[in-house]
Length: 153
Image: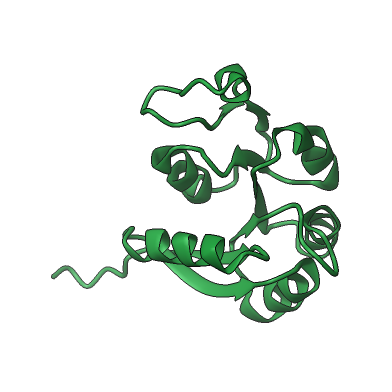
């Protein structure tokens, strides 16, 4: 062993559905270079955990009780602009609102595994503007067999 320490991306999941959090937790635990640092059930809890746990990336559901993902994203980007927020939702019509709130990336929950992992691992990419792929909106699949999103410069 060369003594180097593997670089791990610190990720926080914010989603009000336990099933979604569990699925993301399982996915992240199988991928080298990912470290799940916490899970939040709503936007208020996400804000508390970002302050305490200092994640690099937040996977943010947009529709949550108490404080929704849009408001939580606004607060995170205002207080911790270095934290990348990836809006991860089932609602294709929320892209403009998510970007206006400061989300760095916008993905549909049906996106491909490679797309999600690429978005998480993409350091310093907040200058890119994500768009929902037209095929995802029509219900067709992107290459790789699942509906999702694409990013354009």
